[in-house]
Length: 106
Image (cartoon, rainbow, N blue to C red; front, top):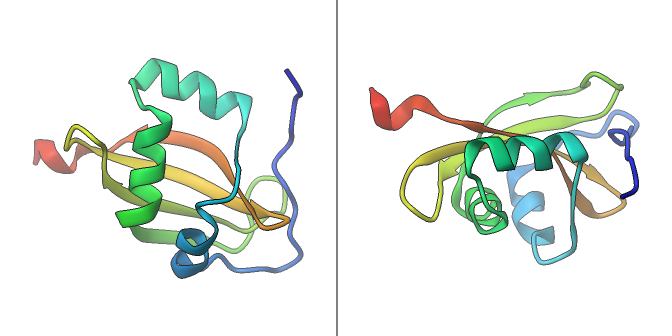
């Protein structure tokens, strides 16, 4: 499996509308995100649903590697909440990691 580092867009900001528009394109899921998906029982369908119907709750102009990143939260297929950290690289969504979201527990 190819190891990928996080992309480094130059000063781009991520727009939730743009994420939804390119969701039909191939998703690139980093190895770190795949590991977290398995640990947290989050499926590809969950990721797509969160990105498609979720809400961007925060944006970071620069991530760990100088990339533009955002965190989107929404409900998974089973109704539980999850968060997906993403970047955009060459018109494709790069999934950096996935997280459980405690909103349903409050």
